[in-house]
Image (tube, rainbow, N blue to C red; front, side):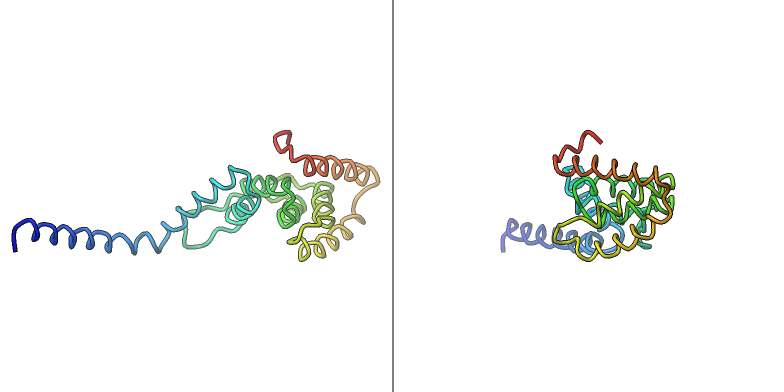
Length: 171
């Protein structure tokens, strides 16, 4: 065997050993979350409501084995962006955040706005959320004063316009 063939075989073994040593690191552990997190953030920046919703979930309740820290304000912002894009679960979750005052200032009227939008959402994925949203909205309506109910109607109409026009920059 000549020296060139031996060198080529040696190079192949070295490259395979290096690849095998790094592959398990790339496939497991926290690094996979950073790759997926980067992809999700990119998709969210492009306006993908599912990615925005998933990021909201990650910041609301991060997995234990990652370096992602809970950030309720960030979760609320991602839910808001997805909610404007007519994502029913994001609308419902945003209502819950407003109801609890988690990541946003507690505001029962705004919670009722997002519950109303989730309850009337006609998307395919909204069916499971709609029932919970209607129930939450019914409970909240009893707590709201008459002027808050009037404000709610106005806010729902404004958000319906934004959702229908797909003019997300105005919010």
